[in-house]
Amino acid sequence: MKRLLLTGAAGGLGSAMRGRLKGLAEIVRVSDIVDLGSPASHEEAMICDLGDRAAVDRLVEGCDAIIHLGGISVEDKFSKIMNANLLGLYNLYEAARANGMPRILFASSNHTIGFYRQDEYLDHATPMKPDGLYGVSKCFGEALARMYHEKFGQETALVRIGSCMERPKNHRMLSTWMSYDDFLSMIECIFRVPRLGCPVIWGCSDNDTRWWDNSHVSYLGWHPRDNAERFRAEIDAAMARPEPDDAVAIYQGGPFVRDPIFAED
Image (cartoon, rainbow, N blue to C red; front, side, top):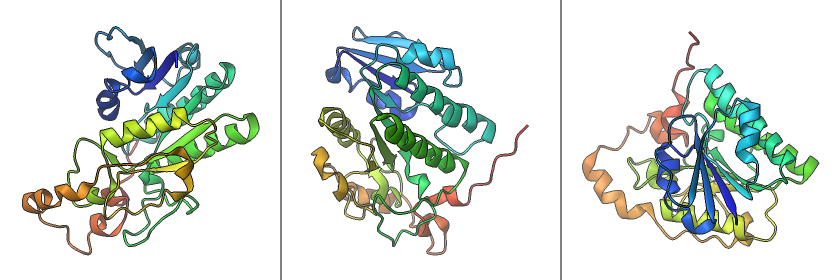
């Protein structure tokens, strides 16, 4: 690729992946709503509010592919979620449509299905059960991407990220964890496969206790290699297991199912 766009580059996951993308494109255009520091020799840095249609048009222009991690990534006030995750995503897809429809990796979330129990094994066709306004915004994002695919042919990978971080932090994450290396290998497969379509992809490593079935996207050639099980003893020693009647131990969305709706000012 000539130019790859990474939105949300100043966030936790964006910051972790930013330095790992150098080999995917000649130029990596990094963007966020805050200062991104000095760009590396292979980078272009652009500050952009996703709610600003003209700014998003400029952001997408000249890009061959997009990794969209931008937006609100936790439960928050609806006004904030609406600007970044609904309006902002619409702006991104319209900008992509006007600029040759570069393939998109959309960071969806496990919180689209957070009210399923942890003893249920889900596939890509399982109906959504969002666990909050953030989860609802990701349901919207998946629906928007699907419409742009069916109507215009825009290809998008709908990646329902579990817990993508250096290491799992609690017992729930032993099922939801995705390593940075496995995410990077997924990204490589998404942009390499000749025909992508608009698949749901569960974003987790090869964990012994995973809850999600990715057999429908075997055509991507993605084979996660890491397994959260190697952290189990460490987590057991660091913290007590949640009580059996705690939402964290019952629902796949964990604490999100009990989080309150944030009041507006």
